[in-house]
Length: 80
Image (cartoon, rainbow, N blue to C red; front, side, top):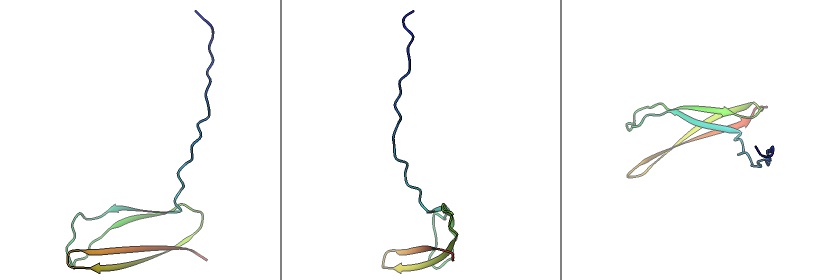
């Protein structure tokens, strides 16, 4: 039947992607919104660190002739 074999393998070395300390995901958002009408966006904000954080949300609206840009800034600071 032949000779007995053996398995040789090498360790696979690879770098894991860095973990983001804070992750923001949009869970639900409308596909269409009307001007000057309120709408809701649902986000999931995950703190992947052991540090307690304080959340601050700010919105800025920039308008030109063809589009309105809504910028939402989320600031997280370490709670003291």
